[in-house]
Image (cartoon, rainbow, N blue to C red):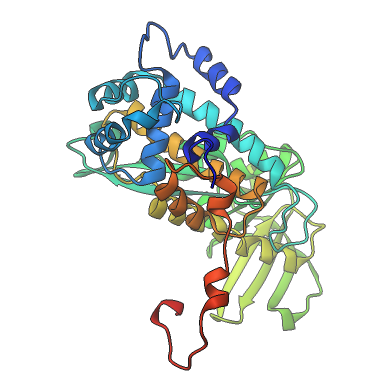
Length: 389
């Protein structure tokens, strides 16, 4: 029987502690702090995410019940909801954001060779945003509509491994296309977006940065056809054209030629039209890239279902951003854990197991390794089992 450290303590081995301390020093997070350090704050918030705590009182009650084990979990300071609330209110949210970027860089290296279903040499990103509704009375700084508040999570997702490499949090009324200005464009990379991001001036900036884009075209696009390339209509392709924009403003915003690809999805009989500045990729590969854009939608769905980002422990902008960035850190940490321990389980399964075993004294690899022993010992039966469906 394993009698070493608890699972939570072993989980901390996957966190680069020295780089966390660098993030804290960068923003003077521990300035005049005596007992409840930034590390204590992060670990308490990580515990809340890993175990699905609903409120500060819930966090306090659970951690106090586990008080004899907190030292071994790395939490040195006393845990009180008022102390945690003050820390989330006053300590710079950029500490959590910068540390999340440290984990993201590590995860991207681990997943760099992963296959995402498209034969592509360069890096491919999906860019989109999701809205999280809030109460206007509690979050007046996040005004969205007349009687509603919200924040938006603008996310750039690396399609290899589904790792979020850029997250920008804004109030709900921020136009999504304007966040393109915040991206640090990577030469040679491909950015896949929906038609809500069509702004030809900003798309031309991507071209001038020697990067590529794939975006779904709007129906009222005014263009002039220049030439066509042959396509295999059995694959769903209908046309592959070189065009130039003809509108008085759009032609000035984007003066270079564009590639227009028309495709019909055989399953839904839906017609899609894509615009790209990449004239070297096969037309079918362009359509496959856009199909993989749905990974960013799945990412939004996953974090909303499995992490605490729809109900917040504080109402200030700083507290909300701290919680969101901690949630992203936990998502990336679980992804790192899956890759480094070579686990066959999904991220959701890993998170559920950790939520029940954080303070158990058992090897983390053993806890998370899938076991088929029960399946092998199960007697065969002709009767359907409800839980196998």
